[in-house]
Amino acid sequence: MNNDNTKPNASTFCQIMKPIYYMSKVAGLWPQSFLRTSPGVTVLDIAYLLVLYVMFFFCILVNSNAKLWDYYMKPFESDILRYGLQTHLVNGLNLGVLISTINVVQYKRKWEYMELLDTVTRVVEQEFHVRYPIRVVQKFITLIICAEILYLMVILTGYYFLIDQTLNITTTYLYVSYYMMNISLLALINEYAYFTVHIRRLFMIVNRLLKQLLLSDANSSDTVLLDQNRKSKTPTIAYDEIFTIYGKGPQKEFETSTRNVRRNGPSKVSVVAPASAGFNKLSTQTVYATFVTQLKIDHQSSMDTIVKTINRLSVLHYHLCDAIRLVNRISSLSLMLHFGAMFVFLVFGLFTFYKAFNSGSWAFRIMALANGAWIAFYIVAILSVITATTAAQNSGRLTGDIVHQIIRKHQNHFSVDVIEKLSTLSLQVKMRDMSFSCGLFHFDWNLFGSILSALAMYLVFLIQFDVTPPVGLNSPNLTIPSIELIDFTM
Image 1: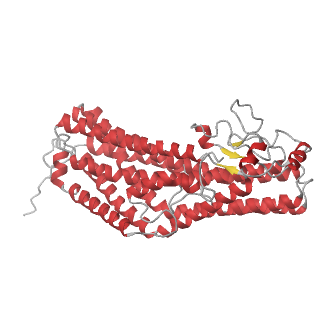
Image 2: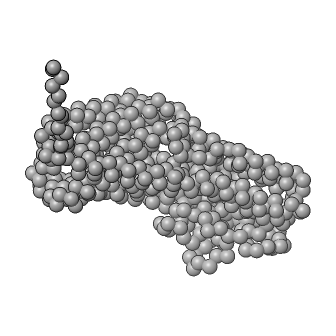
Image 3: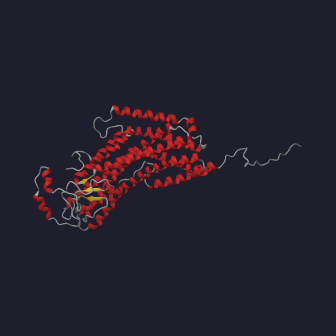
């Protein structure tokens, strides 16, 4: 009666990860097997990676040809634009080779990350009764990947009709090069974003489970108690039928005991029916919400139970901080280099807009329209990474606020051991590093502000170089001071 039709031993995290894994595999960012199991790295994986290397090196050699780019940029007559676009494309192709090589070197760390998140997810699901709408999230991720690839193909098609047909420039190699470069970028962004989003989801679960200690059971906008005060008109199965399906008789003792439990706040459900309204519905709420089927702490819980729960949540939070460290080691270098490449293109792409408005040439207007699509593409990629990392870090830091709320509210009611464990957890949250960083800078909104300010500065430089004419000896603006010759002969 599992709605997700998954095997009992299947990992929820790994199942949701499958669409991203396939895309990374195609892009050459995942040369090994999905998990640390046989066969690991096969001969077929190595052969496919070598084919990708050959394609990348071929595109690099083609785009390094100066005559080809003279042909591409002949209608524009702008050396600044030509060197900028050529540098962006060649650097992007080199990054594709470098990123694939980095993933080959660090494939064991990626396995380590998968095992860590898989273990944490299993603990959360089994011990704290958390469920995920696996199929819904898989469909959501698949739709995002399809939309990204579709947008990439639309841009390449736009290049064909705007540049090839309008300006009569054959740009076949340009299409292939842009596709090779950006498919690896898409795979990297999707992989990094999902790693980060899942860490945030687990932080949110830890926070919601900690809120049980407030003994108010207030509903969270990000956490949904399945079947709580069910008002849906969808048919449900009685508990007796559930136990009959699983080959067990109805548990009368449990039903009798639950009737005598005193409810505080919204009702909690100890045993949950297999389905809940909206659980399998493809919607943003279903994708981002966390579904908890049972809360373990209430007014009747003993202090020993509370201490054990705090210890378990503290260990989970500690391992999630380790997951952030692994993500930084796996993807931060690749992401930093791609951010640099995207910044270079943003500078020259915005310079194309200036040339389009300043010169009034149709060639520049067409190029500005084509580059505008790439600018939107890269800005969305940067914002996706920064939004995911900031949300995950804020969720991790929120744990400390919740702990102090619990201490302030129940410091006179909880035992000394409970208060001591909460204080230790608060210190742990404060001392652990939860920042997503490449070592040189953090992936946060300060980075985005720095990118905007640097874009404005370099764009002003390029405009000045374009506006100011070269000054030579034959320039009419050059004035040479007269020199009076003095005869010193007597």
